[in-house]
Length: 547
Image (cartoon, rainbow, N blue to C red; front, side, top):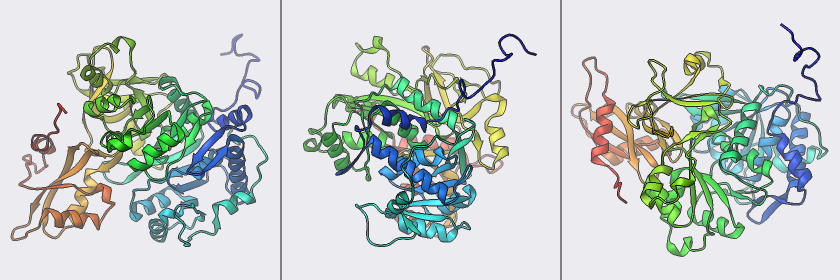
């Protein structure tokens, strides 16, 4: 039914453009053409040079047949080419698929096949595992070698080098090719409880809004210098490739997340901001004094991936860092909940402040709703800091869905909410705090590890009859896999032998760090009671909460 507010007042080019974060670069390059956009070791790129490389990459890919819906996969460390790809690939309507650099060849091959990869950019540092992955895959993508000056050993696997590809393109500006902001722009894989990666599809609209939301809750400015310790493959770097560019900040790329390199980069470039999992904070916190004394003061850090211990937050703030905790999942574009600080907490003691900052917090302004609901009744739990429910989301910074997995998408969106699988309470001020995980996913160093996948490997050991894997708290990694195993009659095995077996069968970061030989508790129907094992691990290996 029409009325005076619809007749003749439709969407036209003058009043409606698709929201997309790729537009941020165009404005910043116009505003600050000679400002340093990217620093990488001794190299640096102005915003004009950054934009030229993006246009060159985009036009070169178009000349080679890349079009809307083409999957362009990248395997790379935090290097400038990865930032180029975050703008160039979606600019032409293609979809950027970022690979986890810690995965093994079998998982990588699965992703190449499932994503239907047509173009593959490979940082030659990862040449060995990617050669294996491509050999296991049914895909025959065009492969582009990113030859980085720090790791060149003469070997290549592609048909063209990245710099030669850029030379094929043109730096002439052109308008992006996105017509519908609901179009897919990125594809990120996350492990499910079955161990099979699921492809999470992002839209231009969602990425735009979450990139803006980052700056609303964690203000950055044109003088911000951001250090890339967070992998860009994690939820597209939590959307910060677009956020930092939007505000005209400087990206400091860092190939290796190692404490000496981190501190040197912070000191040499007067870094103001960085993001990372709690393990990165802990790495800095426990670095030698002669190293940390070089650090600038008042660096702002956003941490997420696993709930950081309050002791780590307290220790980092004592060193002069300003810590903000975020919470989210791949399915919601990374963090979209923040433990936002309130001025009335400034006068509290250090322990109280750290405990408040350790909570997950409240939703971003750009995420329409996040609540802790009873999954049976779908009603909010009371704000009593005791009643446990499931964290659920709904809004524009929730994924489009899982690629080629309609049943799981529908299940995840049941009752009009995205079900996170994380169990939490709500405090009287409405801030949420995680208490447990309904799925048996272990978060180690910011990486998701499927307990079922690890169990599947353990069951392949000739001496093991049964196995169950749960999380063990770890000061360095947040959590590590702890395996309970029962041996076959007459068989023997040592902890070291089983761990080494796992290392030969899967990515090393997924391997259990602890093996406990025990009879596994079961229900009357034979189901292993993991809640008993979790409690046992908690009692056996509890961290010192008073530290």
